[in-house]
Length: 80
Ligand SMILES: [Ca+2]
Image (cartoon, rainbow, N blue to C red; front, side, top):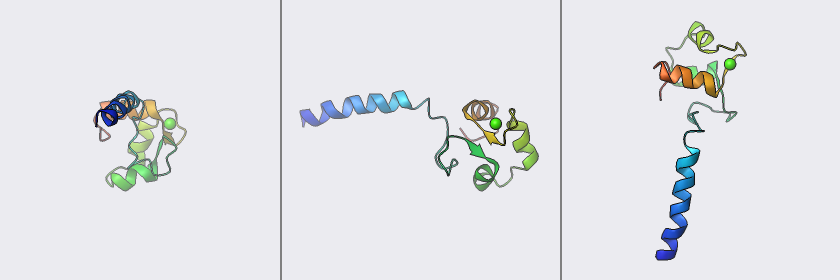
């Protein structure tokens, strides 16, 4: 029992540490590339229009990277 706990504690610590780096939601980022495409976002937010997406995609590469997702999430435009 004690041995099991000593294994779990460091794992929980690592998970907490990795948390903030993983800003992307796996439920949205279907292909797991760490970025949101318009179809991926529209699948979970049907009200999202291509114009909305273009506003969020400040670099204009057609994908929302971690920085763009963070800005949109802070602005309340994407689910946290
Ligand atoms: Ca982009």
